Image 1: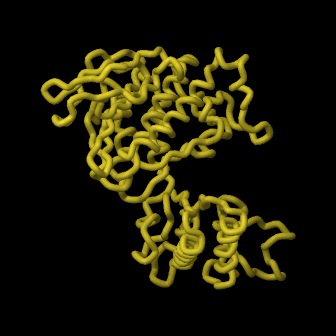
Image 2 (image 1 turned 180 degrees about the vertical axis):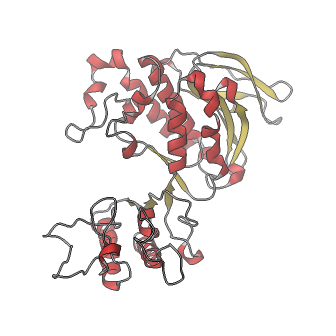
Image 3 (image 1 turned 90 degrees about the vertical axis):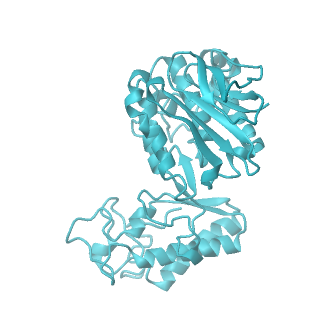
Length: 388
């Protein structure tokens, strides 16, 4: 949903009655510098009402589950993509746009009041404070915010050859420094898989088997990480070709003649199992916005390309997630665990044969010794364990 700007088409909203009406009268303020479009005048009640009514219309009349609001940062800042002399400060001398803030607060408050269960998601690329804070606490009132930092950092990490990943280890751990500043979505944005940037599985290094293994390990890490998950179409079955708006997703890759060669069904089954386990494991979502729901077990094993952390349910029940982003098997890998759990059971392994992996799994419970368990970590894989 795009309330940030609108086209200059003669037949549309631009100079609607022969003069600026939906856009500001100041041409410099009205023109969007990046997209050749016009910005809305959020200071006019009629314009705000038009936009709020439109948001409500989609959700009430068409039963849309939620709205992802585009380019929120371009609305919030008067100097967005503008050089000095191309913008004027607000009445308080600042660079933020109070009219846009008031509009977003009104839109979110109205939508959540009138359409219970709806969700609004902000694509906001800066560190604006309170994007997902309630409007009565002076926040913008969004339900969730895209975690653009996590997306860029983690995609940067997995695109490196495993031998170089140790120099980029922090790109996978830095997100936890700010994970609880907002309610986040972990997105794989449409912008990251078009215009020559390649599909997610094709971004991965190595041969086709390694690319798919990297893809599976990455999704296992993503589903265990605090925040909600958002894939772009085609990623749930490892489509190798970049997205094409003319052709849509390549569903035929799931047909019998392609199944054995590309094992796209294995990726689809993994995503299905990730979703099923996510719903069944309160540790993955009950404390999603609470720092007590997360604890690093191994966050500094850069030389090993290994990450391990626990998620905790409201009653304290843990789930242990371990990712090995190295193409080598790691035998007897030692991980600290709580003393009060007698054994751990593997509940997900992205290296399982049914997903297209090498099937280096651990079907038997693992018992700790002296506060540690010893695991054999499969190559390029993520493993989840819970108390047996």
